[in-house]
Length: 288
Image 1: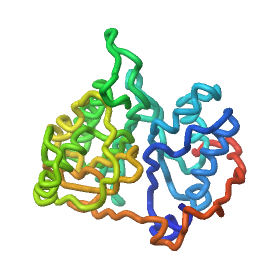
Image 2 (image 1 turned 180 degrees about the vertical axis):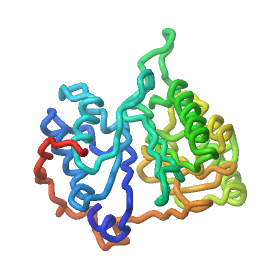
Image 3 (image 1 turned 180 degrees about the horizontal axis):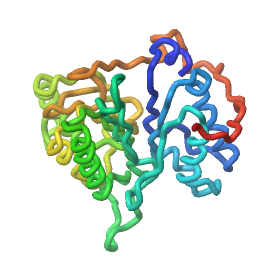
Image 4 (image 1 turned 90 degrees about the vertical axis):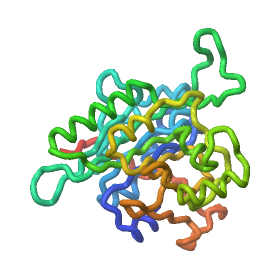
């Protein structure tokens, strides 16, 4: 992280879920893990935000520290820009972050950050999820929040404001794009998809969306402001494509993006030489 930040010199860092693992035994270990993750940005005074992934939440049932506690801890850092979710919106930290022009207060870009949850419930209407994906999904109130916020930003700006969206658990459209198909998943389908959607990168594991299609992609097409959706969750996938005018993953259409791997920076992550000593915790002073 430190080498990437020093090399890329970003203006903003987004940690898109699974920021810590589920192995924390108590609240102190959770705070230490979160603290170690954010120190590279804090030490460099770089603004940053987080979304939540399922592994961030895996420790919460046993530590007495839930998502709201995690959010409050993150927000205690001076360079964090996270905000609580609006009332009635599922999850923690669902928010939008407006980037305003250098001359004046008119927004010129927007970031949507959504909490895509953890795991599907055990049952719905007495039916379990055996045979279906057991991850969580964006709820309709989150889709409505995106639509309403997008409309409000456009009204205040006097025009549509281009945006990116960050979620942890992927939409079903990621898998559709890889094969240019809903049902057929052959090598020939993927070759057709590469030509159709300009896909580059690797797919080393199946996408793991939730059991239901939440409708967010349809809402994005309807609003026409989100230029790209970035997900985490599938840790060894690195692909990107243009799915009907919206980037899924990371790549370049109206924005330029690229991936940086540890090996690019001469770092061998298989070596047992990474520090695990907890760094000093914040002093509790909130940014002004």
